[in-house]
Amino acid sequence: FSDVENDIAEVLYTEQEIHAKIAELSRRIEVDYAGEKVLLVGVLRGAVMVMADLARELTIPIEMDWMAVSSYGSGTQSSGVVRILKDLDTDLHGRHVLIVEDIIDSGLTLSWLRGNLESRGAASVEICALLRKPEAAKVVVDVKYEGFQIPNAFVVGYGLDFAEQYRNLRGIAVLAPHVYA
Ligand code: PRP
Ligand code: MN
Ligand code: MG
Image (cartoon, rainbow, N blue to C red; front, side, top):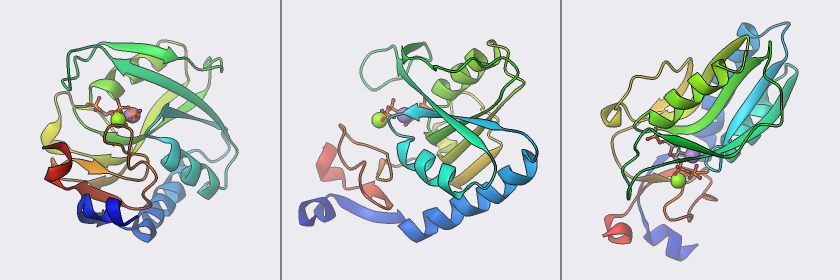
């Protein structure tokens, strides 16, 4: 991975720090959903690592399902209009849904997704996001389980990509400017 190391400006969180945070969030989730069966909804593709670790850390009954969504809009600017590329296979009627995300950037994806899932008759819809960039927010999203607040930098690893690369880094790192310059 010497090439990859060269592409990293700074490690923000190590694998150990991420797992400690996921354990902390899991303990809260276990208390809040005691006696219920939670449906974890992962948002492809970024959320795969968080989902895999959160699901295995939780000691309460869970189910997992997945959605893939894509924002309409030109270039890198998210428009807030979201298209479903892969829908859930699960009927949400009466279900307690916990959306699992890697990062909240503008908040447009999650704010749309929450409304969409609520409209399907879920008993509750909450959000668990490992990272949030408060400075990048275009809409306020109420995140019940939030891992870390990070600066408005280009971060990769632990599911987060740049042009589909770096998702497999174990930690979360700031991408070196020469990569996207
Ligand atoms: C990223 C990230 C979140 C979303 C956050 O996904 O994983 O899902 O953007 O952005 P927002 O708050 O501005 O809406 P991306 O669209 O890059 O797809 P990916 O998960 O497949 O990388
Ligand atoms: Mn994503
Ligand atoms: Mg991405």
